[in-house]
Image (tube, rainbow, N blue to C red; front, side):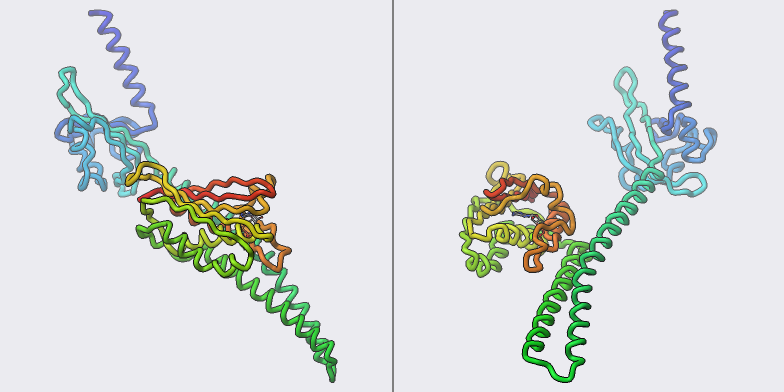
Length: 371
Ligand SMILES: Nc1ncnc2c1ncn2[C@@H]1O[C@H](COP(=O)(O)OP(=O)(O)OP(=O)(O)O)[C@@H](O)[C@H]1O
Ligand SMILES: [Mg+2]
């Protein structure tokens, strides 16, 4: 008996110290929701002293968003839900808004009767604020990187155009132009036109990339999106001596997605595949599912080519904005296609994987959650 008492008293002091020095606010309530204890941290966080809260209903002290809708106590007083964990917002004594993570635990006696609840809460207002600031500064850093890239990308064609302007000006300042000179001027204008349309493409793609529009998510069939996209590209494919093979599984479940954006994904992947097969080849388009018929949980779209493949050292860079190995080729290749694909797939909670072999071909697989 003596030993038991001794153990009990040391346990009591341990608990008291724990409650006194822990950073989390802790308070207990009885079955009526009246506060029976309130530790030091709870007092610091809320601004209430012990005697101001003891015996008061907790909903009168914590004017919280949870009190009206889903009181955590009403939840944990049910036998089948002994713990409730939620982020809550409440007002401190001086009216300051506090965001906290609250864990509410059912509290029983030895006979199993519910006596009340223990509530442990942590002030996460600062953490949330810092997370928000971090996100903002990350966004700014990305914007900085992108603007530097854009400035560089746009500066080159503009310098070219300006040079041609002055060349043309020099020529037409003369009284009479020879046929040879008129031909040269024509050449300059064609180059200027090409460079201007490159700028316009950069700007258009950047607008897509920074995407002012919010996605319009609707239930849709990925096969329809793919069929729709490939129909826009048939002429180009035929010209390049490319064979198209389609492997579409039956009973593909619907997904939730933005039709236009997913069309953009396929457009970019198919264009890349086509551009990698200059000597012709086979483009395989596959739609399959993971999971049982009717209950598939993922839909997988694959765009596979028998083209030049991707070098190991480039694999980690291909999703970076402005990374392109096609810059020398007829003014093509902004290096924005895959950056846009990655952004869209992320918004759709999907993932991208790649298989590639130099000289043999590449396969891009997009995995999207089924509806
Ligand atoms: N199917 C593919 N086969 C081989 N290389 C590829 C393939 N897809 C992408 N790549 C490589 O990844 C790079 C980046 O692709 P991305 O689509 O982002 O830009 P791009 O095609 O060069 O230009 P843009 O799409 O903006 O016109 C390409 O330049 C190419 O080197
Ligand atoms: Mg591309």
